[in-house]
Amino acid sequence: MSLAGHLSELRMRLIRSILAVALGAAAILAFYDPVLRFLTKPYRDLCASRPDFNCDGSLFALGPLDGLTARMKIAGYGGLVIALPVLLWQLWRFIVPALNKKEKKYTIPFIGSSVVLFAGGCSLAYWTLSRALEFLISWSGTEVNQAFQITKYVSLVILMILAFGVGFLAPLLIVFLQLVGVLTPRTLIKQWRIAIVAIFFMAAIITPSGDPITLMALGLPLTLLYFVAILIGFVATRKRLRDSA
Image (cartoon, rainbow, N blue to C red; front, top):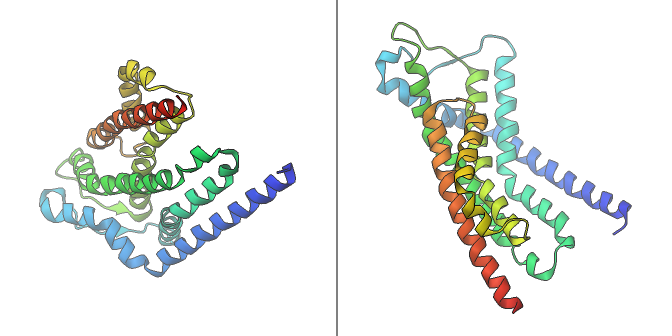
């Protein structure tokens, strides 16, 4: 393609991606109350199981714009999550003309594994949320009543879910770099100590709560996925060398 052709293709992919996110956001807005109940369930369950925390699971709007801001955040990020398969497909369709025939066969595995890993990370974040809140609230003291502002609670939950989801996509990047020859399995194995330190450092940065429970909940699975990615890269690289021979 010419430069104009590439720009036209990019514009078309962006428009389709934006429409997919907008439709996902509209779906979240249509079911906002059930989605909000789903997001606040870990907090409500924690308050019910720990009467000493002095909370009832309610959220408070401290300003006239808090409710609207929370609704727009949930709709926007929720639409992004719903549209993820479409976004990945549009991204892949944009770069696929530059790939050879053998590389194109990885389309479905990469997109499918991306969706599965992102969903797994989001699920783990949701499962960890109540334990992270329990750790954070316990530092307040027994004489402190818990009154969470809706915008701050929603921001914490959304950022935590996205951090886990995006973090779980890192092994795909490692596999991709091995397939294109930028990294080798041997190099990754030699640098495993540095990699583990980097994984936990990254987990400490991207997790918004900053508590050790969330850090371990993200760091340990990513460490395991790191070695799984090396194994996949080793098998794929070995097969490619055998086919070339």
